Image (tube, helix red, strand yellow):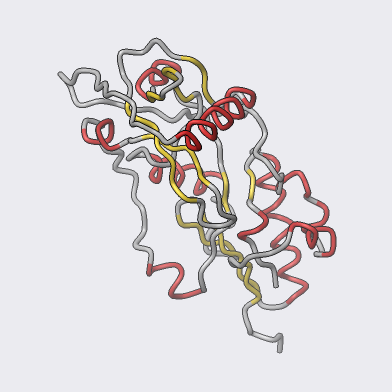
Length: 242
């Protein structure tokens, strides 16, 4: 009889240097980049922002920032411009940018105030399971980082205002109201053949479960191959294997 103890891939802080020491994972360094690459290739489905009929563009003044925040703002704007994630904008839209604290490694992350846009966006009805359904059964996992292009006609709606001008996102922002539903749709599509056989997904989280170590390595290789094929990326510091 095989050992029925589940082998589970879940979340935990892990040092990037350990990647080369982990069986199977060491064969997929491109799935765990230190920094997300530039714009992804075109996909069959693009993220879209459909508005309630009759709504007008929302535009608000940028928030005031302290001198150290302005310095950091200039740095992060340039980084996102260099990666192709944002571009200068002349959109009639514009919600203020601000900083939030990074949870994993400290520092500040540039975000924008999505609430005004979310309030007038038609909600995507794609089903998202209750969080207790999959992970009460198998354990908790969180390890995903995905970038996907915005639909061209929706890009102006993502404009955000700063002390250094107006910019707009070419890639999807997770704070948008329909981002979780889009992530859920994408992950279900990518792992349709593996779902409930040895994979459970919840929005941008993946859990791999197996009966023994040998089977787990096979399952892990399948999952990492799928991610590579679809140009999807994982954050190594939020993954644990074993």
